[in-house]
Length: 81
Image (cartoon, rainbow, N blue to C red):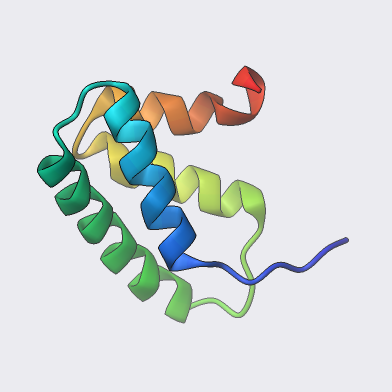
């Protein structure tokens, strides 16, 4: 088992990058990323540890609120590589 520290900056960059790949305007992508990261920070404060699956499920759920295609990309991310 490996333990990794969650990097909000890298995650924000990833959200913005994936959003741009489906033609979401940069300003909108930044807003989505900011909102999702803010909610994620609150969610992680309540937990001592989260798994990759926990994080993935959370991101998909939150991203669906803003853009279903973006949420789908994150859901399928491991399968697409």
